[in-house]
Every structure is written in structure tokens, then in C-alpha cells.
Length: 283
Image (cartoon, rainbow, N blue to C red; front, side, top):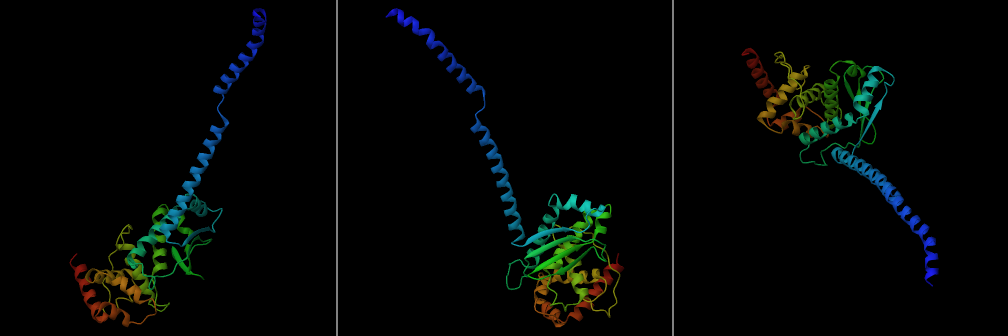
């Protein structure tokens, strides 16, 4: 019996060695499950970040979509626009930020009865230069198009010019215009006022020449004069510009300004013009 016991030992050794080798190999080789889990985790993290980004943009834009269109492809302006404003989503961020500033100023209570309905904003770099840096068109289903002139992208200070153009375009979207009947000079003056005075925007103010007293201050051809008039009475009656915008929702007549100001606007224009002349002469 003892002899048979010794004969069995050599037969058991290879098996033990093989098991030991397998154990060592298993310890050295990285488990497949661990590698797959790492890849899955990374993909899940990227998907999560993407979802957060989409959600943040949706919340910031309050439900409207923002689309970018480049009609100046294969040009210097178009390539620069693609690089600085499309590939990194900068254009969308500027539009959303500007819209948030305008909305909070014109509609602080978010009143759905007086607030404009905006479902889609299209930011389009046009294929040819325009007469202005930005031209706003309205389409069906509450869609608005910001037509951007490619000449903006050709300047050395294109970032500042683009920022101002987008701010002005977004402000124009949210301003009522008396169903198209409000004086164009008044709308331009409101835009000038907003781009000069709203927090978060930076545009140097320009001093206007003394206007003619016979010209109504809200119809003056120089938008800086109109903006000055709006600023003058906004400081005296806070909320004046906001109330004016709401009053233009359903239409326009010159009596709207009288109602918003609480006094005949022509008399107030005289007061503003005289104050402007005094300030300029005292410089």
C-alpha cells in the first residue's frame, strides 16, 4: 500500500503545476469585464454630459430652438464664422444670453398675455453683404431669422461687432412694433437704448447733436436722440420703456405715448430737448 502511494505522487504534480500557472496568468491578465465596464462608464458619462448640456440650453432658451445657418461657406468670412461661432456653439450662447437679458427687462413678470411668442430663432450668416450688420425677418409659426452680414467677420474686431449685432437682433425680436405701424425711428431708438443700457452689454454711448425742437423726439432720425429721450424718462418714470413696448402689442397711434407717460408727449419732448441742449452747452 505504501508503494502504491508513492507511485501516485508523480501523477498529481503536473496537475498542481498547471493549476498554479493558470492562477498566475489570471492574476496578470486584466479581466475583460473590468475593461468593458470602464468603456461603458466613459460612454455613459459622455452621454450624461450631453444630456445636461441639451437640458441647460433648453432651459436657458425657455423652449425656443436656435439654429445656425452658414450661407458663406468656402469663404474667409464663412470659415471664420464656422470656427468661432458654430463649432464651439458660441453663437447659440450669445443669442440665449442676449435673449435672457431682453426678456427679463421687457417682461419681468413673464406675462404670457403680453409677451411675444418665439418658437425658433435662426442665426444665418448670409451669402452677401447687407445694408446693416443684422436684419431681422419674421416667418411662420413664430420663427425669426437673424440675417448677419458676412462683412462683420472680415473686420479685425469681429467678435465685438458680432456680439453687438446679435444683441441688437435679439432685442428686435422681442420688441412689439404696433403690428408694423409704430414709427421706425422709435423702434430704432428703443434698440439703441437697450444696447446702451441693459446690464451685461457693453457699447460706448455717443453724444447726439442738439435736435430741432420742431421734430418729435420719438420720430427723430438720429436713433441716439430717441434713445436719449427714452433714457431721460425711464430714469424719471422707471418701467417707461417696458410699458411702451406692451402698449405697442395691439397697434399704434401717437396717443400711446401720452398714455404711457401720463402727459402730452410733445410737452415732454420740449423738456427733454431743452435739457439736452443745456447739457451739451455746459460741456
